[in-house]
Amino acid sequence: MTDHPGSDRRIEIVPSVLPADFSRLGQEVAALEQAGVDRIQWDVMDGRFVPNLTFGPDVIAACRAHAAVTFEAHLMVEEPDELASRYVDAGCEMLIVHAEACRHLHRTLAHLRELGARPAVALNPATPVDAVEHVLDLVDMVLVMTVNPGFGGQDDIDTMEPKIAELRRLVLDGGHDVDIEVDGGIGPKTIQGAAEAGANILVAGSALYRDPAGLAHAVSELRDLAEATRR
Ligand code: DX5
Image (tube, rainbow, N blue to C red):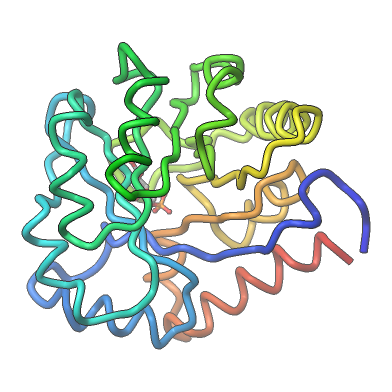
């Protein structure tokens, strides 16, 4: 096992539900679980923080009984404090808020923990790592966006790899028990760069749904590629 940063943390493959068939979301969620994913990420967009509109808490609640895996809500919204409890009630164990949307990030993250959720914070591509330096003790995970959020199917911004490595160093130097997630343009050609830089939670949308061999093949291929960076 190479001892590169983060190699002690479990690799997890997490689907973004954005490319799924919205007319049959319950079955799609069950199919993702059967395909061997470790969690399911719901991309929650409010049409203000990002120029797109997606899943209200009732949609997610309606899908909760269709799978047992952890649901995480990636809140791409302007006022996460206003909505957080409704996503916890909908069955999301982890809530991810954007540092750029929180005037009082420290208070917001503490509030998520009080709600019984696992708190996480996300960084847009242009936001520096030190925006979260003083809240690493409050979170279970930091999400480094590898695309500008709002849409699936974009190419990853490969200049994010040094940023992932800088964050992994900050986490290790501080002795924090924090996972690093990446999201946006992750697929067979890009996943190893992100994993080698220090990410251990890898979100993929279009790369899973466009695999002609199906979801299970796509999930295991991505997992094998990411884990190969550990050998
Ligand atoms: C974009 C979302 C991502 C996106 C990933 O704002 O946060 O989760 O759906 O999709 P791909 O893997 O297609 O870039």
